[in-house]
Image (cartoon, helix red, strand yellow):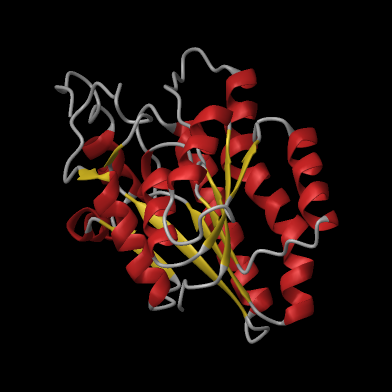
Length: 258
């Protein structure tokens, strides 16, 4: 896959991995549709990006609000803008307590991490199907491979996203449309800044962005990193449920900040 002259829709573009992806893609000649919640940050970024000066779009959106997604989709469809690459990168996390389950917080998290992704795919997939070409990349997580302590809501949302994307890939196979699942481990971003536990193999967001784009350039169907942590996460699925529970149940208690 080449990025030059491609129209790329990128969510979560105002910070973290999304912001680094925007800079890298613009440097490679992509025209970007930057989606995020912070209008001034997005507009400043769009104005400063190289290569396609004046052609990038910055659009504010609250992915926790389904009506907001519908509105934005209508605007883009009516303007005949049809992205050739979707990088659905936005996400949120929250602390989870089994003793105090907060349904409102869980519903918001699933709306951002799962349902907003499905909705954006629904909006732009018809244009890709008509052209018989396009690529969809969703940012899941290594946390979606197996249950994680204090993360039942986040891990479940990412597991749902990964299985949805993989199933979509099967349905779209040989249609000209590819689907990539991006599964990062711990990355230094505003979302992880307040984690009060050890984060092994922590990467900076610019490192993560380069790994993602290298994988997309090669049209990899799964991009998982860092390598050592992803191998451990994959291997954990071979462990018995009892052994895994005994190993992991207090893994995030009493750990120093990463």
